[in-house]
Amino acid sequence: MSLKEKINKIKTKYKTIIMLILSLVINLGFIAYNSYLGIVFKDAFAIGISIYYLFLFVIRFATLMIERNISHKEKEEQIKIRVKNYKISSIFIFIIDLCLIAPIILMVTQPNDVKFGLIPAITMATYCVYKIVIAIINYNRSKKTKNPTQILLKEMNIIGAIVSILTLQHTLIMVNGGMNKSMLILSLISSIGFIMLIIAFSIISFVKNKKLFKK
Image 1 (cartoon, rainbow, N blue to C red):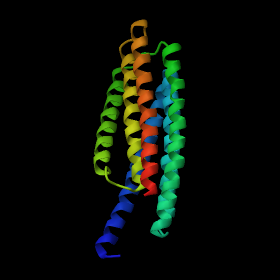
Image 2 (cartoon, helix red, strand yellow):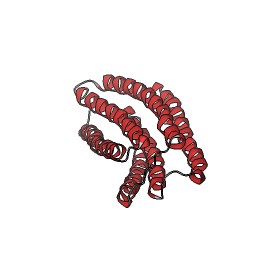
Image 3 (spheres, rainbow, N blue to C red):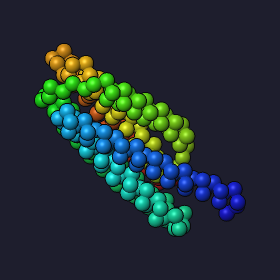
């Protein structure tokens, strides 16, 4: 292996680990924030979203541990482990994406009289913009990568961006007086649309990358 290849290998390794650590910290903060909203305002949707992000935290943490433990292994063995982690994590993500249907149903069918202040709206809007920007940047950077871990992170960022839009929608409804009849149908249609988009993206990405890893 040439010196240039060694340097690129080290850069890729630490870049992935740094991305994972940063994602874990932000993920944990979002869990805490949604848990706070759920407990203080008795908002079932916020509680559901915090549980959803807790599962994503587990996947990211497990991936970080895998990346740390395979650093001493041969390249071929690393690839096998990463591909296996990608497949297992993708299936797990697909299952918890389906579980998002539960808080959406609660939000629409059993809305609490919850009225958020302006701070949650600003916070959620900032987070939403951050997730979208990060998803776009990571997508462009890793467009041609064949590293299963980087592909997994890219997909999780895209899904996270879509979920953040869904969360922002809910927050804006609560800021503007809570769920009412005029918002119910619109909220239901848009929420189902977001979920279908996430599911379609997950299936297409999994099939596409499964073929890529076989090459």
